[in-house]
Image 1 (cartoon, protein in one colour):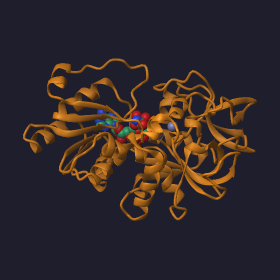
Image 2 (cartoon, protein in one colour; image 1 turned 90 degrees about the vertical axis):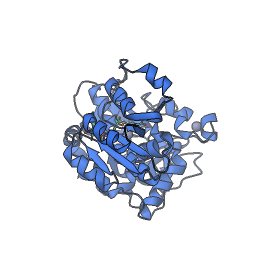
Image 3 (spheres, protein in one colour; image 1 turned 30 degrees about the vertical axis):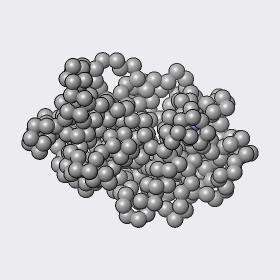
Length: 373
Ligand SMILES: NC(=O)c1ccc[n+]([C@@H]2O[C@H](COP(=O)([O-])OP(=O)(O)OC[C@H]3O[C@@H](n4cnc5c(N)ncnc54)[C@H](O)[C@@H]3O)[C@@H](O)[C@H]2O)c1
Ligand SMILES: [Zn+2]
Ligand SMILES: [Zn+2]
């Protein structure tokens, strides 16, 4: 079918997104077609345009945070049917590989190929200007219709509004899980969250759910400092130095129990800043994406080892999509999870470059592209 999509023809060059006609194939084996309601704008898509995440291929259809209704199912799909409401997960989970059966779905073997530039079977579902187009995370939610692996689509209660639910495809579980699972926050902990955008604000929600006593957020944008309080931060400051003063005072110089890094681009110095804020035996969680080719980190290795700290990487917040996506959706439904409050502004697909400019300027917690009926 013919539809439209936002493509990068020259990733890594700051060229911006081209909204144009695309041809979308029907679902093949173990795939479904979904009509999307909306797509969140996550910072990871911007990394493709800036080159922080370099791609060796083009073009790419962007977007990996969507939700919608299944319109067609391909052969051998038994778990979903036409009309089902689904959230698209930015990482697939096959449910069969060793990591999936061990409950570590974020490490599913299928996930290793999400930036390979084609569907899991090695072919393209999207075509533009006569050539095959790769999709971000096998999804490509910057288009009102997508054809995706069934392992990337997670069914949710149809009474849950799909627009806020789209955020549960990446930023929400990534941030929340970084606090709940990766950081393993304990009751009464003092927690620092560096960067309270679409991911970090959910780390704040996760810290609340785990019963953190003090939640200190750090973000240079005043509007985000203000919003962090609504999400449960007990203190919100604008810089590392301010955080140092607050943490020192509140912990008698001991340091924070957990520090979670969810800034837009993780430079080496932020890891050492997090290290300095962390108490002996504490945990640092690195969720933010660093430029892929970055290798430089200045780090006090001696005191890190001798103070028994842990540096924990966090992919998708260490969540298990088939468990955590419906769980968060249900918590939202019962008023225990804030999703609407994350959406600062909605855009039409044609406004996508404005949406990314707003992301870079720090204007939004989350910008969301909404598709017409
Ligand atoms: N690990 C994963 O699985 C995963 C999944 C999704 C996103 N990400 C990454 O998480 C990061 C955050 O994504 P997002 O969509 O929330 O981005 P965002 O732009 O919405 O938020 C980033 C925030 O960091 C703030 N910030 C920048 N420098 C800072 C500093 N030095 N100290 C404190 N705050 C600072 C910005 O003001 C902004 O509010 C990105 O790098 C993204 O690629 C990782
Ligand atoms: Zn994302
Ligand atoms: Zn798997």
